[in-house]
Image (tube, rainbow, N blue to C red):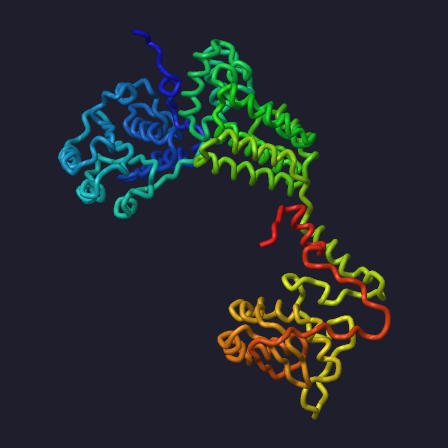
Length: 543
């Protein structure tokens, strides 16, 4: 039988300094050992493969070591060797998933009474402690709170939220972090050098990124890569042997977007399918690709990109070709595609359609720039008229600003003191700006607007505004809200007319044009620059 031992076991840390990425925990534990402030219970929580069980074993060895060195185990004494080989009677490792019942905890309570066989302490390491039943946790409470002086517990879990608060309050809690990519890369580099393997930095970086913060996962993948590639590990061999998506393919996507080559995009998707790549992996990598471009475009640096230096330089060069709004849109589209593939009956068709959309969609424009253009358009002189700001009647009701008559282009209409009815000119002002008034009703009370939209203006006589309604119910709704409508009239026109409703009746005909040249034609709602920009830039559609 072969004596081969996997990397994760062979290179398990033997000193606190060897635990990667958890210096805040190992320093605290070493200080506790040095000052004699060892707690009776510890709780180690964090993601998988970050050193929880390894640190627990190191702590058990350090407190039982015959000749510790700087609070580290010497790993040569009899106690250290037995703990390393898993045959020590003073350190018991228990799997919480298979020993989760109250009977197992009852046996544990009986065994804690006995003194350690050789060392100074008996350590109980319970892995995946969150798997214990509620009854088992309750049975452990008393022993955990007041154990014998020669006993301490170390619990490890990946799901801290499942551990009862009564257990948490009796333990010193340490949260293990995800290990950084550069720390995993350094660890793999040390292992490769010691094993006599020739490995590219780019290949080790790729393995570390695949580990996703877990050193054990990265080391397991490293074993697989070495088995596939032999003693010389390169990115090209890794990509070919493990059928990984090459980084170059993502740069091809951005090249196709810049050139607008939709046919090339479909050819690339076909290449992905022919090579048998996982579509989810491809989209995940593409989302990260756009994220890296966005980071460079936003920060002007590549420090936040987890990649080799050569790849970082490419991102620095490629980012100049895209704007921040474009990258945000592309990333949102990729994320939406990735989510939609789960429920799509034809994932390839969905991916092809979205790839063509990414390549062919026009460049996004900055919202601030768009609003600035709209403001400039409002300030332009009317076609065929005198210069000056456009009146509110030129703006569609949905976007018309709320202004009183005093804000219009003409002279303000003021009520005449002591005279009943509307002031001179108010009738024409109300009829010409009726749509603006409906916009105010809509923004103030949407339920009333649905009624007013179906009503029509019959006429304006003196101080009375006559409204035509389709039926008695509609007329009743208008009169029921006449006080609210009066306030809206005052807000828009600075007047308070009397409202009268009639069932049926002909609509108010256009008022005769004032003397002088005919006014210039006003743009319709769909001709408004804002509406056109929203259609062009965001694909807006009328509803």
